[in-house]
Image (cartoon, rainbow, N blue to C red; front, side):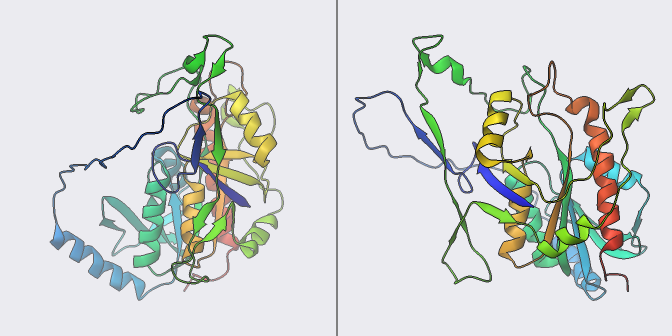
Length: 332
């Protein structure tokens, strides 16, 4: 599986956005930009952190573990609802930096689970923290690939940009935003020279883990949300497709088609590339398992994530459990 870090409209690196303006005859000027300082009131609890780190030291003596990283509560609920996760009787969890790392076993294999939160920064931060502090030997990242309901305002949005409003003249005129360019990422790795970045477009997940996933055979997945609401076709597991990641929701048929035709991707999400790049940068194997919950804008009417998102999360959890069961080691 290859994951493309496409575009991040909110932040700096891994932002790879280049806007070329359509308007001409703009006089050059020098701007002094003062980076804003974010005031965040954080309760300092050094004693709690010290306690958590001491527990982690004890846990690491019993490693290694498989690292499990998901994103949102819906995915977490689907995973734990399977009943396959058995919490550690002495230390079922460790709280650190606002996240709860859960320790336990799945199919007799030792695992450490965390819900990272939405977006690339959260995903990278949680992944790096897991790799730095816990005795994990690989990462399984999983969740749904979903988007916002079409035509509605997301209450979590700080602002919204309506590109069509920048047409001059209005209607079918020239759009002042011109075009968006996609650049390669800077990738730093333990296998490379220190402080020398490699140019990266596609981040590849671990081939030996992909091969293991391709040997699942026919995985029985759920087709229905309930007795009266079902998918038109039976869902199936497909291994080795391309995916893309950006800090944007995609619910637009035109952009969806552009991504497919240009990059030949099969899914869009907001975290996978960050988890992949962080894991590869540190030299750890990983695999990404995503359940498709909607058509990213190609549907008629409202986006289906609100209807089929929970079903996609259930099927994703099934695939994760099957992979853990077949993964050798981690059982002593």
